[in-house]
Length: 161
Ligand SMILES: Cc1cc2nc3c(=O)[nH]c(=O)nc-3n(C[C@H](O)[C@H](O)[C@H](O)COP(=O)(O)O)c2cc1C
Image (cartoon, rainbow, N blue to C red; front, side):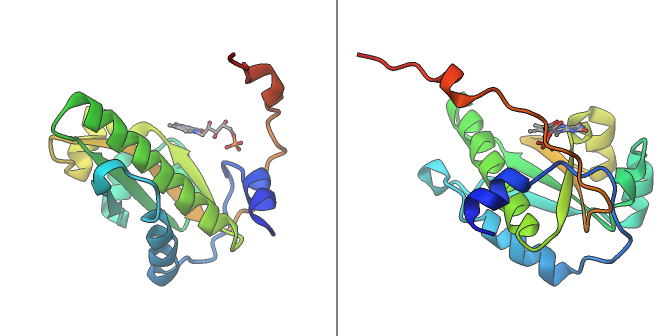
């Protein structure tokens, strides 16, 4: 697949096969994540690999759709509000790099925003000064949903004089 095909075919996955994903694979995709743009080279991302005990405590309603691996991506706050926002933006770029690197090798991710709830922050031991950008199930998809239609970009473009 070329880059456009990878981007266009990616889906948020809600049904995973039990085939395992190993740490070497995850590290490779996370390393691709680190090539994300990040202002002032703050490299604000941190990753928690969620083990079985923590996963059970997180108590996601569908147990991350039985994904064989679960990880959380955190973004460190900056020294100003602007830097904190920029760090979160950079970490979102990190996440998308990770998602697309995995997808290019046939592995999908499920993005859950549950991680920032105080209860879940406590379970994961997230220190103050970090946002949890997402908790991700990672695995080979059992099913791939049809694409959710997007508004044609022409409707979102404004040409300024
Ligand atoms: C910041 C963020 C948080 C998200 N949180 C959730 C979530 O809690 N549960 C969920 O099912 N999907 C979540 N998603 C995934 C979106 O629902 C999904 O990307 C969207 O429906 C479009 O589907 P697609 O990614 O398959 O194209 C999240 C996505 C983002 C960017």
